[in-house]
Length: 161
Image (cartoon, rainbow, N blue to C red):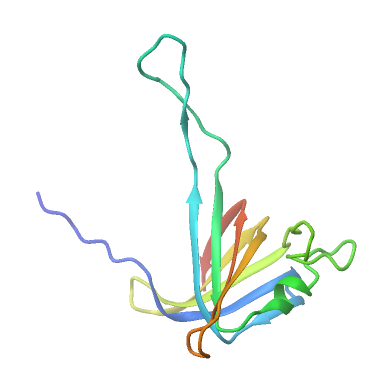
C-alpha cells in the first residue's frame, strides 16, 4: 500500500488586504505594510477527576475559540484605536486606551493563493465576533520595526474566489 500525496492550496505571496470596521463600506482598509496573519483554533480539555480513581474517563471541554495575530510595518493605530467597529452607538473602537475592547463586527483578511489546480485565487478569511486584546511594538530601524495586534474570535472561516 502506498500513500497518495494530497496537494493543497498555498499562499503565494503576502496578505493583500485587511478590512476592519462595522460593514464592508464603513471601516479602514489596510493594503500596504501587512507582514503576516496567523490564527489557531484553541479547544483545550481538562480531565474530569473523580475521587479515589487513578484515571479519568472523560474530559471537560470549554467552548473552542480562535486566536489571531496580525503583523504590520507601521502602527495601524487608526484602524484599531480610531475606527468605529460597531454600527450602533458610535465611537466603538476595537481597542480603547484604558478601556475594554469592543467586538469588531466586520473583520476580513485577504490573501493571494494558488489552488491545488494551479490557478490564482483570492482567499478571504472572515473573523467572526473578533476582539483585539493587545498590541505590541518592536521598534528598531525602519526595516526592523514590527507592530503586532492580537486577539480572539469565536470563529475564523475562509472562502476562495
